[in-house]
Amino acid sequence: MFGEKKQLKKYIVMSRYGDNENFYQSKAFVSKEDADKYAELMLKVDGDDGHNYFLFEQSKDYSEKISPMNDFRKAVNE
Image (tube, rainbow, N blue to C red; front, top):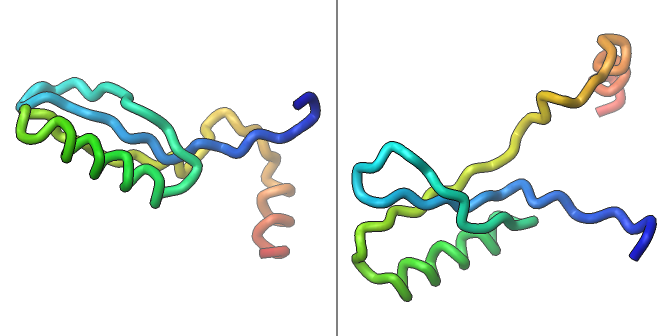
């Protein structure tokens, strides 16, 4: 409830119809395995209706503000 830290849903399944250049978010997941299962299910249910599914992974947070010294400390401690 309050104070609980939510898990980051960094795996996002997106779809695109045919040759359309736009992607649409379908659903976000905590694990890659869950995202894969979702995409497989959508392909099974929708069949060959022209939708293509893609996995996007959040790999960097551009809004995260870390000083160069913190970057150095983090790299040394890894």
